[in-house]
Image 1 (tube, rainbow, N blue to C red):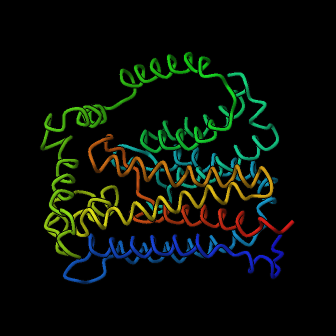
Image 2: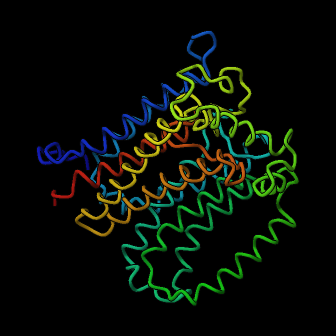
Length: 365
């Protein structure tokens, strides 16, 4: 399982490693600015550095195990993550309206559930080729695989992460061959589901956050406050930014949750349009390189696994940036490698380890 030969080192994906390291270092630099007190390292910074170390070790371990072993382990790992999600409903306290954290707020199982989900879906689609999925009823089993963790996350009242998990699962729909006209029924059901969700499930503050996207001035001191402050921070950054640790919105703490959900707002304020473009460009290169890894994979399971990893990186980045720009509701989705959060960071490193795994073994069979 841990067999390593010289070909793995010869085929090591240095491009992927450099992209990840650059983004991770940028994220730490950004976190220091948003959390420091009088230039001193904060407790959040120390925890993030610890999570980086744990994540790096986890990525190395995952990269060393031939990814084809993960196909056999896919459903056991999936069930473990599902059990962890179920455990939160029994043991986790309610924190800020959701029941998502175990071990006194140190572990968020919904982050690890993304790994189990893409492993299970990649295994299913490898053994049931997507080109043979031509009818909606063919999606019953993969839909059930996705619905179980999503349903448990909804039960935790963490609708933002539930939406994110749904989008990650939907990444695989690009491979199926179901006619577009067949999706009309799905669209109708989705609209009906959203109507039911709005009527019976969404809390008043969640509805206000959605309405604030349409009308940011609706409640500027409550539901629209975070987005309005984020826009001020982004606008004050201008072309080149205010300078590192010089942003007034960030340093005077006008920007709420600036080290978690609104980490990108700190980038935009301190480094401006140019710095923001560089960060987004690096994310774009990382995602494109992930698709290159998928294309070059020597088997379908590796390709499907790489595409799942790309989905796990793309959707939170896209939703987070849209959120801080006021183009999406504030739903608590972190920016990978930038936002503070141990579970999210370790999970991201595990996903990168899987991508390295597939890339290194493109010639080793």
